[in-house]
Image 1 (cartoon, helix red, strand yellow):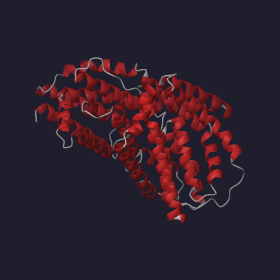
Image 2 (cartoon, rainbow, N blue to C red; image 1 turned 30 degrees about the vertical axis):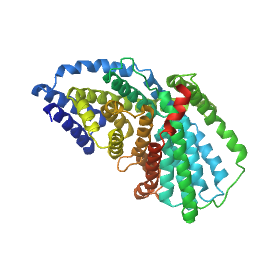
Image 3 (tube, rainbow, N blue to C red; image 1 turned 90 degrees about the horizontal axis):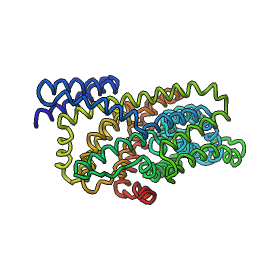
Image 4 (cartoon, rainbow, N blue to C red; image 1 turned 90 degrees about the vertical axis):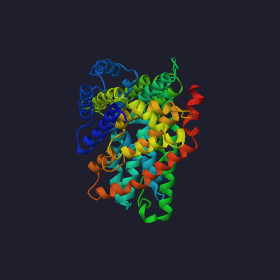
Length: 457
């Protein structure tokens, strides 16, 4: 192995080691990359002058129209979190399904899916549902592990169901990788993969996950009825309240997703419509003045965190490529047995394992620029299918111990009766369900590709 490529391997290992120790992701990516760029320059493995391209790359990031959708979707999610729409949905769904064994769990999954399609922010959904649903499940004698796992899995649907901020970021990075792969093959008018393609491709897999969650909860209700009993007392009629509380989220879903899938608006334009709609709903539900300042502050914090990680990852990928890392990854993937299928399996396994120590944003910004161009050069790898496979795989990173963000959100708001052990054991069957969903998508890629092809090609 050439010395430059050895440096690239050691640089990746150094980043992983620093993250395991607990250093901040953005500072780790930037600091380690600068250190190895200096080592590469001093040893002749690369020229430090390559870093002159960094300002232009960062300027390209902050002027990227697609990434403008990120703060708008985050603002929409935060405002909906504070407008009590989630509470009303949970109460109405609970009354509707509470008479059934496992009914409260079913209601939780359905509300999680509706909130996912309305907000696209995992943290807001996890905190809201943890505060409301977990105490109700415990009052009605649910197994604490099943209760914690159901809430965590339902909240993470916001990662895969459009409009997801993860899909926006993944779509941007995937498009860069796809165009780089085509340029390397001599295609100088490359095709593009848009965020709208990923949104359309994620709809059926998202519904598949919801169906698998519901099937699991129904099976538990049959096999272990004591773990998910019916609600002992259900008050009021569900039909009228449910119809009323469904209006707001359905209007937002139609306005945002409908405009994107129908080709009326770009994801960024649709995100602005969603943000304005969330502002109007918040104004109708409560005093907008009291919630606007904290909502904007939280949006700024989340957006700044995402972009600082992106800046560090941009520097990391620049140095990695200068050290010959791209060619090394391409050779390694093509040398694997099984051709493109073997390479894809290796990448999916690596992403799954990285989920134990990195979150979805970090994996997108670090891994996709490394493996994406090499993998997308191979025949038979559809970029939309590849993106959705990565997205479903990344969903598990939100629930992986020890660093799964959803676990921390839930631990922070869970009642004292829910222990960390309950949460960790509770998510195991749902992580296995996500693996089953990956296998189904592997065997039937049309679940991810048919709708985008029907709409846009």
